Amino acid sequence: MSPNHPKPQHIRPIAICIFSHNGKILVCEAIDSVKNETFYRPAGGMIEFREKAEDTLRREIMEEIGEEIANIKLLNILENIFTYEGRQMHELVFIYDAEFVDKCIYEKDVIRITETCDVWCNAYWKSLDEFGDGKLKLYPDNLKELLVQLNK
Image (tube, rainbow, N blue to C red):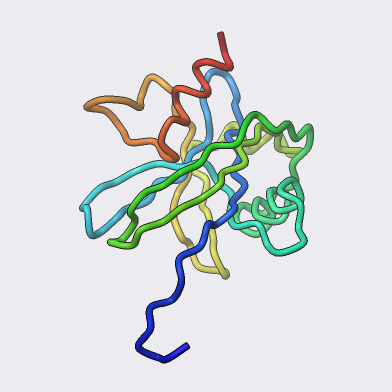
């Protein structure tokens, strides 16, 4: 491939966890500087080659929050096609619910998410009612609708 040839697009598999607790979910706050948009997404990350999605979740939560998790349950898989920082993205999102082994984490108002020892963002406990038209933006698309449907 020549240096001027664009990198081929690919589908990125990720695993995220909502950590539902007392009617709220744990979401990370992030910013898309191109869109000038603040948005929220559950914690998690990219599934590595030959790594099961559930193992990814355990690894990512330990790396990002420094906490062990238990009672992991796959809720669903969503396909997410979107633009972030001006780049077209395509993900297959394994959506889990789980519990933190250390229950003290549920009492924290702000949880620092780190990436390679630097604070990447903050995570907060938010109710699904805080997301929607004219409210906070939750990604991946259709996550709120999925969670509402599962809670019926």
